[in-house]
Amino acid sequence: MKNLLGKIRNTLSPFFITKVAGIYLILIAFVIGIATFIENDYGIDTAQKVIFRSWWFDLLLLLFGITIIVNIFKFRIIQQKKWPLVIFHGAIIIILIGSGVTRYFGFEGIMHIRENDVSNSFLSSNSFLKFKVIQDDKTYDFDEPVLFTSLGNNNWQESYQIGNDLIEINVKEYVPNPKRILNDDIDGRPTLQIVVDGANGRQEYFIGKGETKRIRNVTYNFKDTHQLPQAINVIFRNDSLLFKSDRTLTQTVMATQKKDTLYGSSNYKPLKLGSLYSDGVNNFVFSDFNKNGKVRIESEDPKVKNESLMALLIDLSVNGKTRETYVYGKKGLPSRPKVLNFDELSVSVSYGAKEVVVPFLIKLNEFILDKYPRTNSVSSYVSEVTLVDDKKEVKFDYRIFKNNILDYDGYRFFQSSFDKDENGTYLRVKRDFGGTWISYLGYALLTLGMLLIIFKKIPFP
Image 1 (cartoon, rainbow, N blue to C red):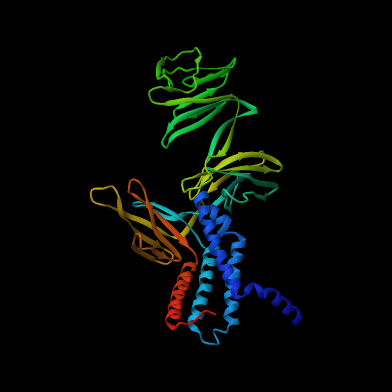
Image 2: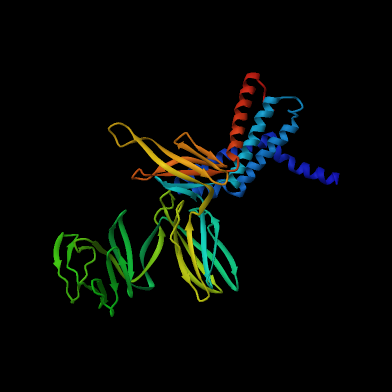
């Protein structure tokens, strides 16, 4: 047994010598530098997944921490009462422990409250795949934490047994900043691209032959047989696009700015691609057409920002019957669920933030925003809140602003943002079960240890 332990010690000891600790430290610094470039090009979540939440980075930090502990005993700095060195090296271990507690046990999100309203929940910053299954008038809700990014492996699959039904989910593709593209495909069909003005600018829609869609206040009907009143009825006949409508429209050819008035009629007229059509309220352009068209989802930009939309291509199977669908979502926001109906049950799936309930209430009494004189630039903003915890019979008022954090029952509330009408606030909520305070203690001891080493001129081992 002693021989075995000796062989293990001799095998592992080269990984925990002082020189190797320096190598670990250089590697950690190098990897953090690489993560900065990844975050700049692909977003913070990609840097988290590829670097900071990877198993090998955790292993690198663990080896570094073990090396420090081994060297504390190897050089007998406790027995020699070199307390500055003990404090300095111990502080590094404490910082690593604090970051580990935050990493594995902490969570955070955003709480939105309007003036004179109360809230006891917030939306998580982490993303989830959320499912709701309705089977025989019974509802089953469950979710799974996920992290999909522009780099790395995004394959995800899981199966669930609900009664006699087997549900299988397979995420086949992750598309950041998705954009719908009209491509030529041998299995395609006549498809039109429609561009309209939206609240956020230009918005693109697609309608294939045999479909009817209502976009904003206009119905588009791309069917040869069934015509609808008050709709823009489109047909594709003899390699030509034609349309008719009961509405009176203006048609402006964008290239020449020639403008014509098209009165409502039961007769078909040529549809001109690239021309602006208007009924006086609604403006739209048939921007593209493909007689063998198929709409595909492609990424417009691999970098994921806070406002970025993301799409997941999912295969969802129930008892071997598979349906394919796209699910859309944004980081930190709930998403609209996609509902798929099967013979045995129905399944809704969504991707985005999860609602987290806290055991107390926060009421926003007033939101106060100050601006610099004679400008619209914000100088400061404050949330006047009241915290109510009926179970503990606690109630108190508090002012939350930049450097004044509400700390209660393990939750910390930071002032984050506000509504455009200045009548609501966004509070960042964080809970890490003491990880932050452990790290703060470590940094304080690290500073103390460095100062003692400098003034007492104690050399490093």
